[in-house]
Image 1 (cartoon, protein in one colour):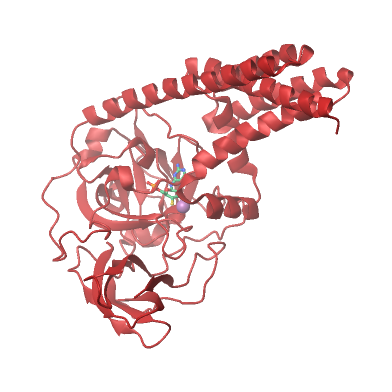
Image 2 (tube, rainbow, N blue to C red):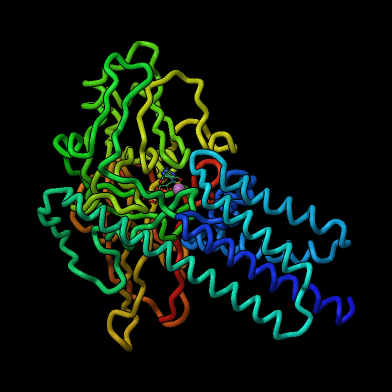
Length: 480
Ligand SMILES: Nc1nc2c(c(=O)[nH]1)N[C@H]1C(S)=C(S)[C@@H](COP(=O)(O)O)O[C@H]1N2
Ligand SMILES: [Mo]
């Protein structure tokens, strides 16, 4: 490509950035986002291998990576449009704007503000491409304006998020605030606390940003095949809620990763809701529906009998659920992977037959809820006293709902040796463990494994999350 050609593409990309920034700011001023609409479209339609690769690559930053990917894609597409013959550019820009608007208007997350921003961005793009800046200065001005407007849009969104967080806090405490019992380990530098604070708890869902739900307007409907449909407010639910401790684990939590957290939850046992609503004979499935259009359905029989103790959760660690963790309510069945445990940001519970197909099941994930594979994570592997080969090895392990009966480590794939366990908060919660290993000089690989109270020993063969959940030992290397 000629130097001029390259410069033209760069200028066009700068115009693209400017137009995107303007569209995003216009959308944000009305409480929406062009980028988030396209990001959600990508999350809803990407083939499973693409989703899996994105999650694996971006770790806990999948939302940021998706947003950045959308922005880079839009800018690259602008350069592509500029390379088209003049007569095709107008239709291409129009198609681009229509696509962004359609993405914003899709499904239950539809946003007219996002659509408006998309159309505005296309208009600005068309005007900008007609007179693509030729000099360096013109291009830089477009780009700088674009970056500035993206930053301004982000500021607006953050302000709305803060206002929402305040509204959530005003709901008041959700839980007894009785101190969490000590497990005997105190605070070990680097070792996960017994309870994960909301701000440190992993966040996983299909949205770019958490939906904002007004607690005063919100009602939970219990409908479908029930004798007594119900509509319950947050305070109706709070009156019947109990506390329980449990670990929540994402099905994408591969060996040693951080997509797991342990919390003290406040929730209404689902059995109690069923007692009031009275499922009819044709009801075999509980569908949990959310404002983001996500659904998870669970078999009714084990939930109704209490064999699977499920909860309608409204509090986490003494507070209302944080917006990103599903405020005002979510369903949680301890022991099931997050993807199968129930939806955040609930709108309703529907009792139904077997015909409904869930969000991820449409994309090829197994239909039936999946139980969490027991896992031991190594948080700490550090020299206990300098100059010696003594290493503190410590971490957390879980095997919900049965609980952890043993954790072992092995050095360089030799024999497994048991470690000391902290006392158990609850069988469904994670349990901390620790040991001192005396290591000869040189590099060593340390692995950990857990055994559940039902005798299930953690599977060591590495396996990716799709389709049956990840397995494999967490391993760390140290040099003594
Ligand atoms: N409405 C809704 N609920 C959802 C999801 C979602 O995308 N939308 N993701 C599920 C997944 S995959 C997980 S792992 C858990 C994560 O809950 P957390 O973000 O509070 O950790 O929420 C589940 N509930
Ligand atoms: Mo997940």
